[in-house]
Length: 159
Image (cartoon, rainbow, N blue to C red; front, side, top):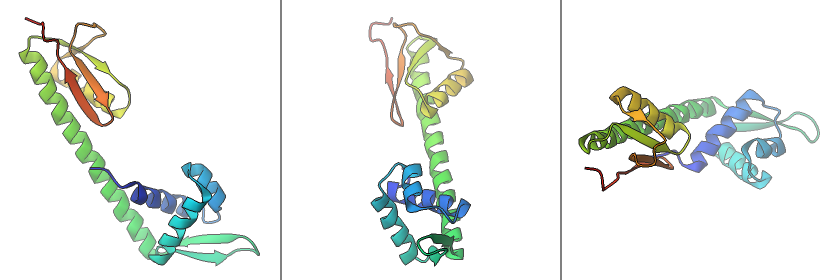
């Protein structure tokens, strides 16, 4: 499971606003890599929910203030995000351990890892933990990273 992109964006907005209440919607849009209209829509939702208030700082400048409810929501969203990431980590480790057992049962002692990122790092750590060497040998089984999934490709011709 992953945090919805809407929830993740709201969490990110709350964090940016908390660190810089004088931030503009244009700079938030740049930081988040989205359109200003998207930021505006999310900020309006945060205001409607009571998580953010607006104060006029100058004639055309606004200041965003996170309410106590907004701070509490940011904390809840952060905890939820962390819990989901740990669940993803544990599930990935378990799946990789199962793949490594299958590799050992098939008589292999080495594996190739195809892919990069955090999931590939989990694969590497699991290999170290399970005593399976990592190789670039094209005849070795492959742990292929596909997003957050790990797919095992075993050589069917191995005896």
